[in-house]
Image (cartoon, rainbow, N blue to C red):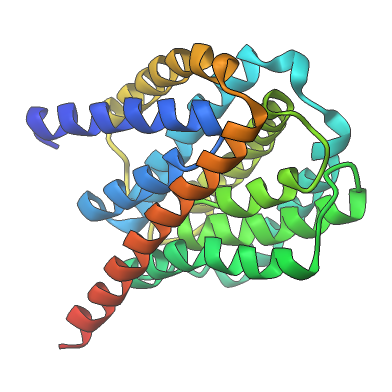
Length: 249
């Protein structure tokens, strides 16, 4: 990766970490799209996993008092179950498929949400969502919209949601790194410099978002989170369809 491209990627990492630090999501969706455009899919997944682990880890440290263990216990068990299941198949999606699913995911989540309202404090709901989210992490690289739906279904405030989601994301992305970094055979070797920059920029962006999250109300959080996800998802659906058409021509 050239120095100029690395500088651009670093700026994107800081910006997406700020967005994730503010809403606990969305930043990862944008970053994985950028990485998929410039790297092979397994390498993009590995770099994205390190970036998200650093971003969520620092965010979890900043808000550790608001992490609710009961809300994340079932989710973590579901992640383990999904990783074990995927390890038997070792499936790695193509870029067009990953991009298209990345865009369709939030719309599918909204459809699901009409008939089912999850409760983060429920171990059974956590197990279901953890299993599905881990599968989506391995398929698209992110599962933020579904995790967001899971936590919005309860009575947690914005800080409890951000902190608890961060704890879930640390574990999920760690499992993704294990999968793409050691289980699948197609994985490449990610640049160590890129990894180091990813960690540094994640900390910078996450720290900068803290003051803005404190100033935001719960109502503003919920409103803007939905608008941002819809906009990003629409772009990815268009891009995924374009990539599929271009591949078949």
